[in-house]
Amino acid sequence: LETERADGYDTLDWIDNQAWCDGKIGMIGASYVGFVQWAAAVENHPSLKCIVPQVSPPGSAMWNLPYDAGTLLLMGDLWWMRIVDNPNGNGAMDAMAEMKNMKSLNTLPLSAIDEKMFGFTSKIYDRWLTKEGSKNWPTFDFENLIGKVKIPVLHISGWFDGDEIGTQRNWMLGRNAGKKNQWLIYGPWTHFFNTTTSLQDVKFGDHALLELDSLYLRWFDTWLKDKSVGLEKVSKVKFFVTGSNKWVETSDWPMPGSKEQVLKFDLASGKLTEKLSRATSQTYTYDPSKTKMGVDTLDLASQAGTMFMPKMVVKSSPIYLESEPLVEDTTVTGPMSIEFDFKSEAKDTDFFGDVWDMDEKGKAYPAFRGGKIRAAYVNGMDQPRALVAGKTYRAKLMIWDAAHTVKKGHRLVLRIKSENFPAAARNLGGMEPLATATKFFTQKNTIMSSPSSPAVFKFQVIPAQVVK
Image (cartoon, rainbow, N blue to C red; front, side, top):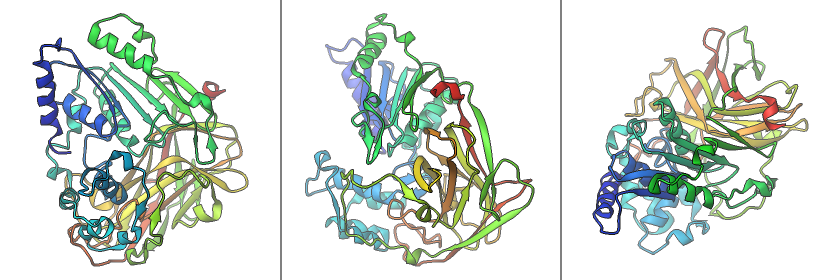
């Protein structure tokens, strides 16, 4: 992930110098192959005319992989190492093979996990652990260049894609820079985009799949062959609304005509409310030594089970809030965020926040992918900074993009906790180097909300008639 910019430029240069190349090059591909398109694009090779990054990670080491909003993406990093840095030969075809020796994730220091889990030492993984902060990723951290990419871009991702934050951030970086020649498709898909019409026991309908090949042909005909094939008639944005199971076409994201709504935390009553008249706070303690992996095998390919959770399970988080029942069907979209003041008695901690759609019977659906932040990065991703005990800080958790209709009578439910193990490594709380830390520190955290500085959930609501 550190040499792709230079490698991409050199590869384009080689292609451009071949007799069969007419000087117009396009790129298409998914996941890592989406990332390398962006890495090449920011180098501005004159022969690169367009890209189609599908389910692409972001152009930063700090927002997805290897670090996710500053937290270490433990399971994702190790899964990737099993594919790309494995001397025993596990390749992409084995990507969804079951993960074994899962209890080895309890191992400290983190640098010892790869040997225990896989039987080999990954030099890439070990190096990643030592590179805390974007300042240690000078060639990977290129988000500041994405807004300067002038060529056309067709972004494709899914609401349940583990790299969706890359599409979300890349689109917004271009949009904020005034980019007009970009298109966006969001489906109800996982990282294996446009392949399934359901997720576990949630059905989206056969129409959830799109015929994309003809769009790709029109895309490359337009930008590489200068053909007039009506691409200008294709909507700039197309997204699928779960809950209503409908596609929506529009000219921008967020959708024109959508309105921001803000729900505030009343931590005394456990309510999300539009008006807040009093200052409230809630304190909880996280002990990372008590967070353990209890199973030894994980079936990555299984679609068994349910997406829905009972209220008693969702409510087990230390911070739990509910809205009032909605008075009408409401379609919630991004951008979304959870923002709050906090203080901690530890030098470091994590916050994970997510939002659910809960029906009248207390059955909750994870309609919105959660946000997170390692507290040591609240003042910048360039390097971790120890918290000062008792000092108040402001956290912003970026909820991943989604579009979901919450039905009349349902409630929005929000929760915050300080661990998401084993997806994320446990924050030990002591600011010791990530690769070698072994000592646990209990983290006493207080979240605060007041009329002058409310803790909030911000989101967009699109006009009701759009999905009727």
